[in-house]
Image (cartoon, rainbow, N blue to C red; front, top):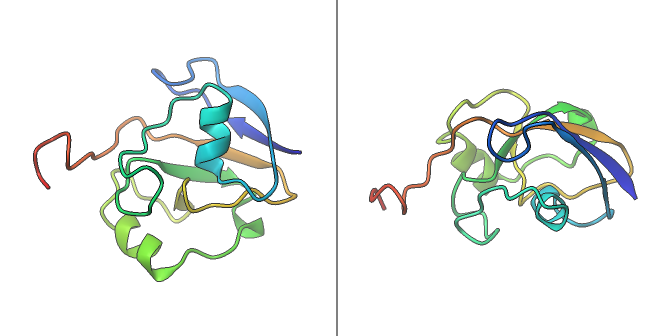
Length: 113
């Protein structure tokens, strides 16, 4: 198991969390399995930006983002150089520290599809 430290998020995880994640599973799946209800409007199919996270530690241990993910990230609220879509990041052996941005853009919910 790999440790993921989730920094505090006002709504989803007010006190932050430390979770054990199974290698090979996505960060999004790991968060959901541990009661952190991160939005994932496209059901983890890499078609939206609602599961956007910022990898504060461990970013360089991750596989690089594919072009499709990079294109979507350009539309994410609060984009930073260490931003990733949590549905596309496979948990490896190295621990991660992630931040879930305060806001997300959900085009379907906001009527902008």
